[in-house]
Length: 287
Image (tube, rainbow, N blue to C red):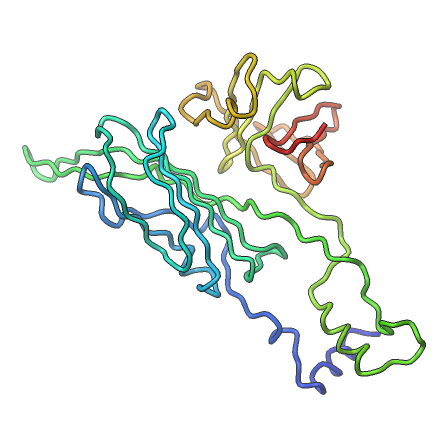
């Protein structure tokens, strides 16, 4: 049936596709953390704008984690419908604090996927001279923005008008079809953001290199005889000094202006390069 006829039936039934799910979201890269109160060297209050920018607010879940430069957890908390987090800590101001927060909302969809935005940033104690000889100090953010880490939804391809196949179109068939609005039979799309393992052999067990794709920068880590927990524990400060730029568009991954076609297998856990190379997403358990 043509789409316009289907919409006409929907309006006749008093139901519209837009009334089925009304959500508001923005791109994850429009979300960056804000230090709300940071003048105390042993406590902090932070604000996440994603709770305001993603609706329905009641379904926003934020998983916060703060660590020091050695990976020790300073604070972790899961908040629902709350945009602020605050806590006290015992860490010298000469150290760097790392913050990670994952915003999820299973009732809000962006680009066809449930909202899942990850922000990873760091804070340092910064002294600013406001007038000669007079300083003010605050916890200051590095300025990273959110990354979309959502997983594609793969609905079944069962868009049929005569739902029960009896050859007779009934009101039940029409209502069933209305329930399929928003479904797609297209292949899922995957993001390159995150951590990936490279091995000199065909086995991920021989991994000696990890790449992290984050906000257009690819970081490189080296480690011999590291397991998954070792790779997970590494932070940006432990990457080698030289970084690469990257962009990803459709099926083309461009690293330092060199484009290459990539495909994904194992539900996005394995990235295959057109030159024959491959990398494994950290934690994917792909062979």
